[in-house]
View 1 (tube, rainbow, N blue to C red):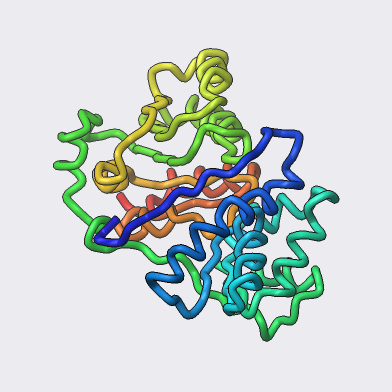
View 2 (cartoon, rainbow, N blue to C red):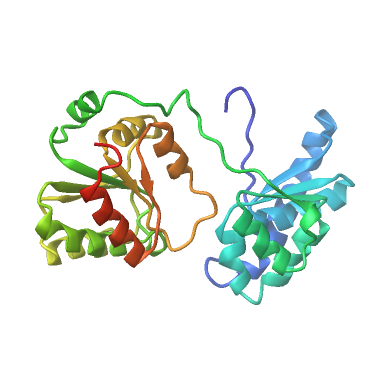
Length: 277
């Protein structure tokens, strides 16, 4: 990738029933590979992203090679995985034994502080965005490429079709707006196991002519979608620092990222006072 060789060591796991062993399994399966790499490239430190199982394994690898380790918390590794009593001790172990920890936002940092991690040990470094790939372009041209109606008010949302992303809530909210705002259209980009549920919801809410599940889109094509939209909407139940927000803003498209009732209020406000007409 970009001239850097990438390895994908396999490790043993049984889905759903042995999550508590994933960190140990990843460590044991990677140890020989990491030692082989070190003989050819004597690296100075280990950079582990996602606290469990990756970060936990990274801490064990660092101890085995007597190297410092920096971990990065991304979101659900702290907000969700710490709810599991079986792996919370390993998450705390990884955080306490890391030489430093990076958080993508302050809220995530505060959650780690609540777990007993020294606040001075945590730095906040938000996610970046590639402005060579995501930048403003003419909306009419973008809509022409995508065959999106030129006069529509377009709401866009992007993410995996899973419950945590809140697309069901977004469709409910959109359905309550639609009767008095016939010119708005919703496009959802992404794929996942919740597609049948969302398709049924679109039918039940009679949104078949104004709400569309686009499926997967190449990352290189997302710029056109962001630029074709009047508004980007993120309705996730929880996020660390969503890349899609940065990508949308880099394209000049405003973002609403709120929960159910505030989401409805903000969308209604946008329809009255367009932020990006």
